Image (cartoon, rainbow, N blue to C red; front, side, top):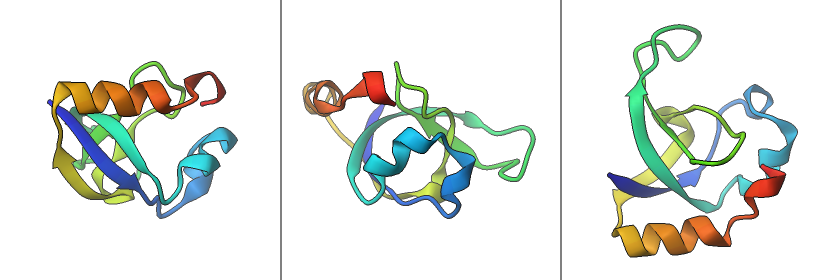
Length: 84
């Protein structure tokens, strides 16, 4: 499924430095899996395909809601993924 959510990480240092531009913004995400190790073990995660953001635990996302494939593609295409 396709989702959108506000990226609001608890600890920004867990991400690469390029994601600072996404903080507080609505981002397109795809449902991932349950994290099996690390500080977010047991949490559900999401990700932005074709980016270097990596795994985003649900706790770093606010207002997660499903969106249509068309809206998700529009949001995804508007991101400058080469910088992420």
